[in-house]
Structure formats: C-alpha cells, structure tokens
Image (tube, rainbow, N blue to C red; front, side, top):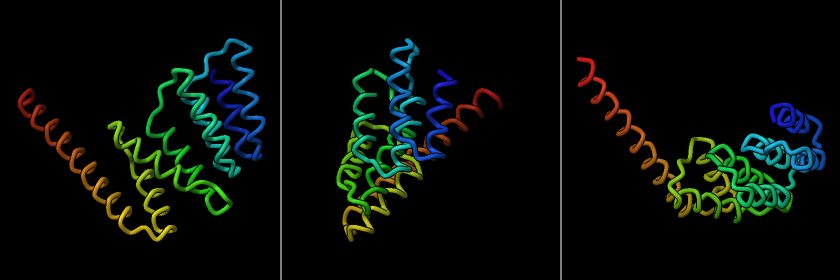
Length: 159
C-alpha cells in the first residue's frame, strides 16, 4: 500500500486527479488494501485540481469501504469543497461536512476551523463564523482540560 500511496501523492504535483483515482481502482484489482492514507492522498489531489465532486465521491467510497476517516481526511474533503467554491465548487457541502464532523464528536483542528471560518467570510455569514469560533473555543477548552487531567494523573503517579 505504501508504494501506491506514494504514487497517488505524486499525482498532486502534476495535477493528475484522474490518475490518482485510477490508482485507487488498481489497488482493488491488485488486492492491495486501500487505507485512509490512500483515500486522503487522492482527495488531496482532487482538492489541488479543484474537482470537489470527485473528492466527495472518493470520500463516499471511503465510507462505504469501511475505511475509518480522521480529521485529516475530513479537512481534505472540506477543503476541496470550500477552495473550489470560487470555481463553482460547493461551499455549502463543505460547511455541512464540518457540522457533521462536530456532531459526530470528531475533533476539528486549526486547519478545519481556518477553512470553515474563511468560507464563512466569503459568504458574509458572520453568524456561522461566530458559531464556528465558539466551537473552536470549546474544542480548545476540552483539550486544555484533558492536558490538565493528564498532569494531575502524572503528579499522582510520579510525585
């Protein structure tokens, strides 16, 4: 899988989203298990090339293939939708993916929040931007509490 993943990632340099998609299909034919890295690399190529529809198809295929997705994959597909919006992409789908991500308790990171807030700015949707900022503050608070708990646990076990 590593060789295929590297080849898919290399497609990003040349803007070859069709080739990246073909490599994913070849992996199935060669009985090489596709993993999150495989899909994320192909989705990233789609983002670079501005083909958000294909990024969404790959994301859907990933979910139907029972491949777990992480914040990194969500960022790639959200970014593909949002960044392509200037070229006729679908910003609303990217924002919906963010909402789904938060509702599923998946942790968003700085890249996620930056992309979504940028999309809100482009849409002049300050209410949504405000909501996203609250989500970001809550995520930071949860992180700080887990760090605090880790320090407490460590100080009890290692006085």
